[in-house]
Length: 380
Image (cartoon, rainbow, N blue to C red):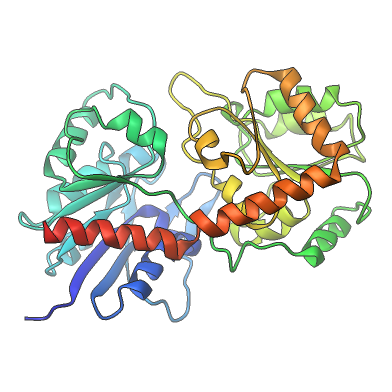
C-alpha cells in the first residue's frame, strides 16, 4: 500500500493562476508524502471580466479542468458531471474552496465518497440567515464535513457557533506571492510616466478594488475633496460606481487617474506607483470586509496602508499600518494628510508592512498550515 496521500482541492478561484499558488505550494512542501490535484473551471464569468483558465507551464500539482455552469452569480455555480468522475478516483482528503451554502459547495458534499474526509474553506464573516435552498445546502454540507478553515479571525468568530460548524477548525489566512509582489522603483516610475505624471513630487494615494459603495469610494472622494496638502490619486478596478467616480474626477484632471483594464498579474506594477494604499471599506447590513487581499499585496510591495475598521482589516493590518474608523471622515483626512506630509512615517510603515508580509503571509507558510491541518485530521 502506498504511503503517499492523495489530496483533491476544488475551487472556482483556481481559474486564476495566482490563486493556484496554494495548491502548488502544498504540492511542493508535501512532495513524497502528498500527491496533489487541483480542479479548476475551464471558463467562468468573473466579478470583473470573463476568465478562461490561466495556464502555467510546469505546474507542480496536477491540474484538472471542468466546465462550470451559472458562474454569475456565484451562489448558483455548478460543476459539470466530469467532477464526479474525478472525485471517485480514491482520494485521502477532499478540500473544497467553495462556500458550503452555495450550489457548488453542496454539490461537492453530495459527490464526495462516503468515507473520504471533506474540508471546507470559508470567507463568510457574517452569520446570515440564508433562504431555502441555501440554508438546507449549508446544513447538508457541514453535516458532511470533517473540518473547516476560516480565512480570517472574523470568519471564525462569525461561524463557529452556527449549526454544523462545531468540528475541527483552523484560522489560516490567504497568502501573497512575494516573488511577484515586491518593491520595484523601476515599475514605480514606468507606471507614472505611462499615466502622464511626473515621476517624483506629489505623493500618490492609491485605491485598488471593486468600484462599489461598500468599498468606501464615497468617503474617499469626500476626504480627497477636503485635503489641504497636495495629492495625486490612482484608482485601479472596475464596478458600478465607475461613472460617478469619473464624474467626480473631472474636477481634478491633473491629479486623478482611473485604470479599469488592469490584470491581476499587472497589479504589482501599479501598486509600486503608489505612495500609500487606502482601503476605506464600509460595513453594510449583509457585508463587511472579508480579508482585503490588496492590503497584503501592498505590504509585499513596500507600500504603506491605511484601512478602515470594517471586518477583517484591523486583524490584517495590526501595527503594520494605520486603522481609521470607517465613518470617521475627519480621522481619514488626518491620517492621509499625516502620511502625505511625512516621508519618514511612510518609510517606517513600508518597512513594517514588508516585514509582516514576509513573516505571516507567504504562500509556503500558508501551505504549511494547510498540510498540518489535513495531516491532523487524517491521523486522528
